[in-house]
Length: 455
Image (cartoon, rainbow, N blue to C red; front, side, top):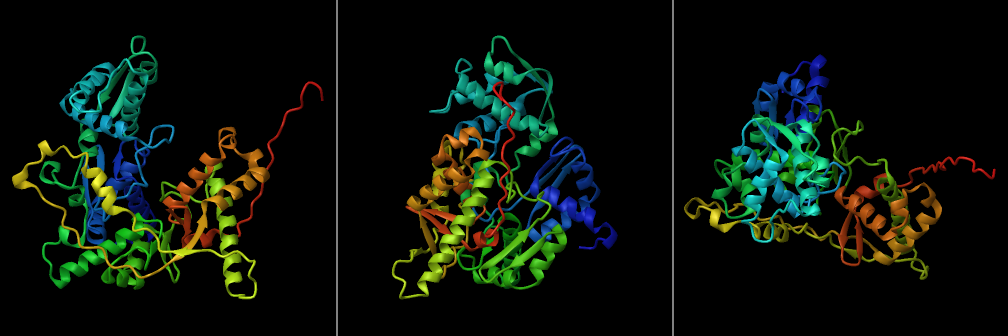
């Protein structure tokens, strides 16, 4: 990377922008993003390819980063405008909407688009789209809104929400941005040429031009750098990474290169390494964060850390038989095989060109050392959640106060996404990153209340 020091901060901002937003348009994520990426296009194209194996493509109105995933990841779903994750129906409607837009002109009505998607959805067993059903309309509008947010569609007149409420009283007219539509759908391989989702992954053997020492070393370095920017934390032993990748992560060069490219700071511990962003702009899940779920997760971190610390102290005092003890278990393997099988079960086999089909050629996962982490049981978590509601419930949103089990599940899901815990039958395993956020100071600000008529 050859960037003058006085321009380094601007270049790092461009790197962070394209890594966080693989699709950048004139309006997404904001109006300043595309000019920033275009300014550094040549430098970005070379650095991202060399460091991560990513390909940057640009058109006059888009910048598209074609990434190389090393594993399937269910923790970053597409989300609705109300921040709810897409379900299978919404993903299907999104794919069919993109297909319909590829055949459409430069402008079309929402009802026309719905009819085109409904015609395709009707040929898929178990899907369908009926504009007479409110649930189908809402799911379809969520897919359209996802594209609208990214600039593929621009509202010219009307209201999609009004059409969703009543398709006979409402309508919406959209302008279609062909460049953005084409940029959204950019698979690394032709989907008709693969027979498993694993063929889209970037294992050492999948993309290497050869299997010699230099090729394997180059790809091991790229996998190490990808892990640093794609995962909240990389655990040396628990993540099953192979020896070459682990050597890159334990060394100084690959980590320093990521720090200089992104402007972030790597924090090392005996168990692993994490790249931290104090600005909060490099992750889709900021922690600590605002909102009831994020605050509850932080409170749970305190309680869990205290329980683990108390149990560890007790284990060193043999005479203290009444002190709590925690079972230690090995973390799950991430369920990559099960997730791949679930995705492959929806693959339309009739569309695969058998003579050209590629099977995913991934290196076998490395054998993991017998590392174990403490288990915190579901019963203790439920009891702790009840105590937190007693102490802090007045500051929580009403819908969460009314459903403690749902709030606990959402908080644990957030901690699992951040790799502070791992869900297992019967509870959660406490991973090392959680200890970084222990002993936080909690300040509860009471809600201001207006005087009543009787005061």
